[in-house]
Length: 209
Image (cartoon, rainbow, N blue to C red; front, side, top):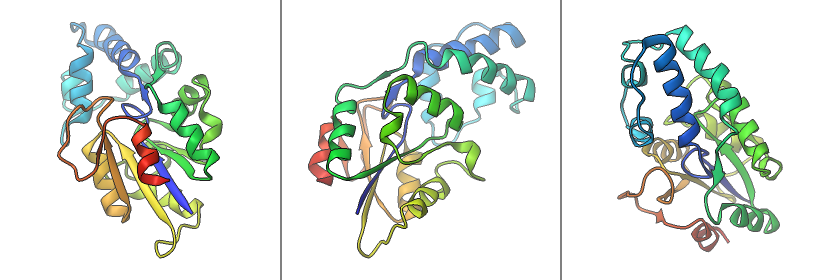
């Protein structure tokens, strides 16, 4: 058995416009702050160590009122502008046809992930879609990946698995879970010095099949 676990934002799909709109909605309504750019939002999300509440809202902690307003707004906003990166849909379909098991592990909340992937008409391809709300620790913890591997009754002695992501957290989670990884550069992170770097989704097929 072969298993490929995908990150979502910046790997499968581009969500930066909607993320930015919802963050700026909170900034405006709760703090009367000027809007942030898409580039700033993406850079902040991809930092290895960061305090997003400070970067986004200039507060030391992420207040419940900010989280609630963001989630209410993003629940509708998240399906306004997302799109799959070129070649993603074709690659996913070819993996499924080849009987490769595919799932999603994202630090986004599961309901948002499922809504976005359904909107883009690829949700049915994945066996498991799991977000940070379903685990005690999000990536770089391996907890999400381990849950997916348990779903498949994964045997490291006879099976292969890969994590495909655009973030150091994805690579660290794969390392901790004891599986291989591929760093995707077509999304939020154009550069990486990781061992396996892929520049097009079709390169996944060359490695897995």
